[in-house]
Length: 411
Image 1 (tube, rainbow, N blue to C red):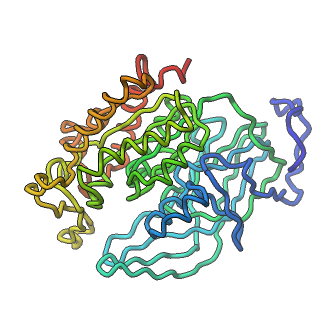
Image 2 (image 1 turned 45 degrees about the horizontal axis):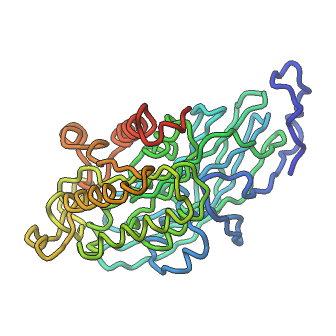
């Protein structure tokens, strides 16, 4: 690691000047410069942050899960430096869906001393070409790109670079025009969250403005986001990852993926929720644990899954989803969002009699009918950027606010 900066004064006038004409300083990207990742894999290009540990990844061969957990939602490079220029070489893997409107490029958010200061994008990278009609996947390799931030204040400062939530990102090299060192522990509570693509960040404006990132910032906590697109499925290996990850606060958002994958019936759902919570409690017996039911999603409120692509508006550049199930199938145990909310409320009430640190939040308090009327879900499943902000602000108020299950985190 480079020279320590502990003794450098915080005012530029009192500190020795940095030679900006010197060659850039290359700093190895190691785990102590990253937050929000549970594992770091060395690749031929550099390092790849993972949001599930290797043991969990080895227990499921699902391609969607592999993609989701390797997309670094909530993962950020953090360090302290006087540098005025920061360059990050990265190799991205971007998804392209044949026949669908192009997805926006990933964004890197720069925070300086906790304040949003800049944004940048990468170039090059790999393309994962997905044919949604056949399920075929083709990888087209591309070159490493560079993300550059310049004109930063010439003083000692804390830097955070939030990685794109929607692109697998291999970190290749970090260069600065002044030494860097790991950011010391600021003493903030650690919030561990698990959920679906909505928690992952789908259609948020940028990585630091997904609803969990916004809620964590407002709540004054350090976020580890295990929002896994299409993969919040009560998997035992995910429960074990939550169990084994240090946390002061935990939330699990359960429901939408179980409906839109049509994964299980009511008979299996209740025991699976109990088993998931039992596993989490093995590692965190008294940690505040908040169970959150689904936000409003009209197509699946009373109609079971699976969800299916709706190509009827592709001519207008819109890909939407529809519920492919039949409401009559509820009688046979098929899940809907209203069924799931009722079961989750019942299970939490039952368990809370012996677990006073277990809490329940109806997701419609984060986004409900009035919100849908004002800010409808553009594709019928995922919130847009404005809705991410609303959900983040609501969660912060309900969870971290006075009387909320996480209120002690702010004291």
